[in-house]
View 1 (cartoon, rainbow, N blue to C red):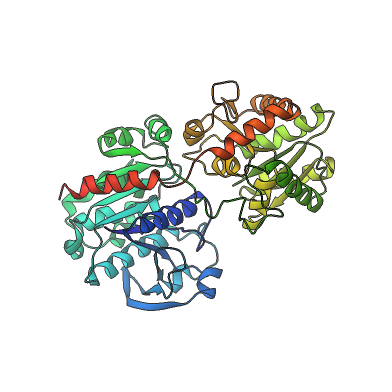
View 2 (view 1 turned 45 degrees about the vertical axis):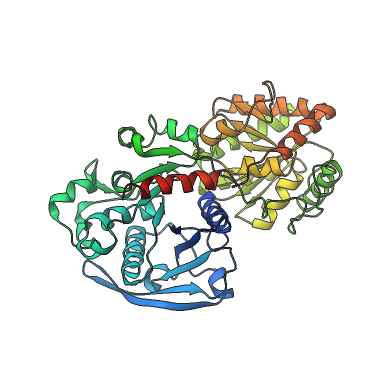
Length: 474
């Protein structure tokens, strides 16, 4: 089967969050299973494109209303990632080293989608199925079905995978003229809440919908930033598929980014060495329990409440604890977290930004990983923490509810709470400290986590099954 994944991110090419990890890993494992997989991403001004060789395979112009942007499509000369990688270069719009956050993001990602389809109709070899990812590619199913110039590819099945319903790519009908010509009687398909909503369009027009965990599929029927009723309407063609992780990249036995490699058989000594390394780097005490947070510093991740909970947690635990934060995001939350360092030296530190190598070290070093998320469609961090013998402390939501079982229940592998609140976080930290002090039980829980299989070997098969089902409808 020839599969195209179209996405704004793909690890290790361009990454902001879990979207990149999922697209990169899913594509690799589908390819290893014998399918011909290609990934198409924008060509940002980032390190990967500068350090690897690409060859031009197509050139054209994107017409976006009165604007006309030259574009080129490049293919990676050597298959470094386990799948074909294509990049769409539109220098005027994507020649920047940041992926999102610009006033012209609508124009940027709409031009990317149009350029991708223009290149696609020029090809002799067409995909059997196209998997779009999130709102950045949500207009592709509509344009394939209704835009006159894409008649050649209208019968190629499309899937849209929803990684988060929080961001939907809305814009006004004053920009309708950006879209390639289509029969105006179909304009209603674009409308949601008196705007063009890219995610809503994708949900309406894609042949199938997937979410990144079964529980998230249930949640968005009742909480999806205004798309709840639409998610219920398309439930008949939807499936929740729990993400996997790349167990080759995330492997404490072979990970070159950590201080000391270890396995399930010697994780106690291995984690101790990594903890000593991290604590030395950030002025923490390796004898104390180490709680870490890795992720975007945003309210949806509970980072605002975490900033309130940290001082209380440290003050209430007289024996002492360590808390370490890695992330970036909301500037006010960043400032709050940085200001705490002066008050709690030796117990707390923070690294603002993202550093892949440091993230690996944190998973290997930490005793507990904090995930007090308000929204967590799947969550990969808890799976990484299991892999490295770190116990996740999570709020029961989205994929966290699918993967983390409280230690008070049968086969418990983590610590769970129900609300993103200071009280719940403090109570869970206290439970974690009690677990830490019971070394036999603590090590048993850590070993259980390391034994879990969260690889893609089952998840990628579910995607293939869905592709086959919709291909049969042609």
